[in-house]
Length: 148
Image (cartoon, rainbow, N blue to C red; front, side, top):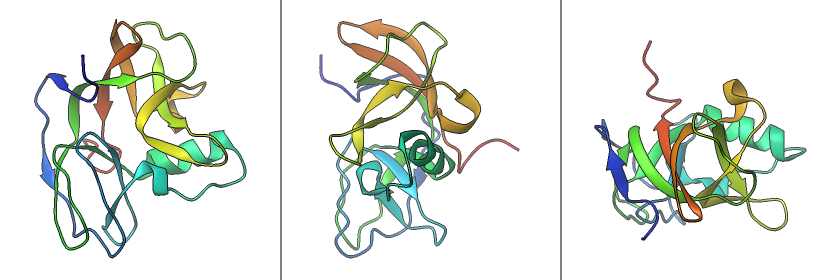
């Protein structure tokens, strides 16, 4: 089974701001949005102090999951809700368990995986709703498009 497939629920998609020079987003990437409204892949998030701080910073900028690919000058469709399949890099998730953006080697996040997190309110981009082999099904919730 390929990862990042939309599984269930409405995606409540939005059209992103324009991708800036040097920014490339692939279908299925976790997409963040800066304070100027420009989207970028989670792997481009600036590292800050430690993993927990970086995950919390990224969660506050979490727009959703890319439904298409784009390069500089493009706008892409982004799912702000729904269930998606991701590889899980660390932790043993239980149904309902919070997951955040996973860490790559070195001081970087990755745009294509999740990891269990300790604090849902500050670090989680979604909750586990099931498991498929070594992947998890995650119900995501955009921080940018959160219901008020």
